[in-house]
Length: 128
Image 1 (cartoon, helix red, strand yellow):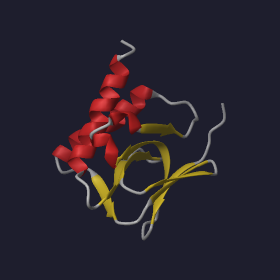
Image 2 (cartoon, rainbow, N blue to C red):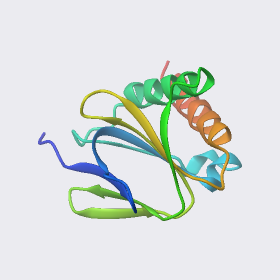
Image 3 (cartoon, rainbow, N blue to C red):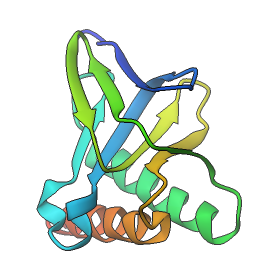
């Protein structure tokens, strides 16, 4: 299995190469089925994505989560396949292992993080 390129970018930001990420569109607060996970290895490791969501939520509660508030679309490049997030949150682990977030400023970061945490926790529990 070969590694693929996974990056996230936004207007006015440097962007980042990612190990894994979660896309949490605004509608996921009411309909969690729209949350999507991606991994640079190509294989989706749901336990890693659940740890990403849980750690980010806890970091947010402790005012430790590094996030960028944006007004422009967030663009994800997965080996040349572009995806655009017009309203929502992209939560990612960069290549140094740090957890970061990019969120549209008009939305509640707390609610989006809670949605991601709940969704990923339920997703993992389905296999237990």
